Image (cartoon, rainbow, N blue to C red; front, side, top):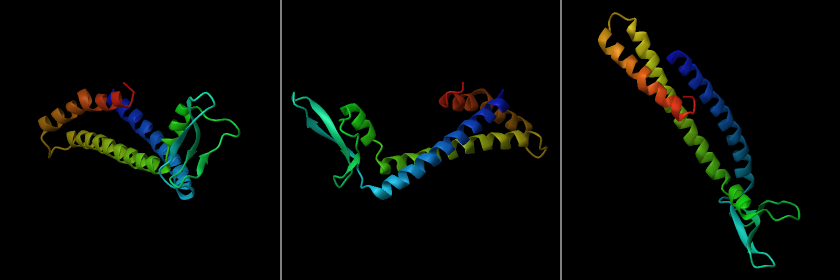
Length: 147
């Protein structure tokens, strides 16, 4: 059970790292071309309803233009929240998160190897391996939606 789960976790994290790498590249380009933060400019239509006319960068330049259509406010705010600086920070947090989770699995695999080494206490390593198999690895899998 645990070996399969460990492989699935490592695969999921590798896929997430690929996504983070793509996000990082796109955000770097956008960051170089625009000023942070991105915001949505709220204007009023002819009926006095609040709508978003455009998404602008920190210097007031339009970031997203939708031809002659005005994006709905919720759509514009969603786009504005993808400010490159914010995305770059999220990528860094995602990378640290994956590295921390991998280190947990590395410790599990070290404990498995110690089970075979006569220099280590068999009871201590068995208890440690059981803890990983019984709740640590399943908890990681549940957090990743793999349980």
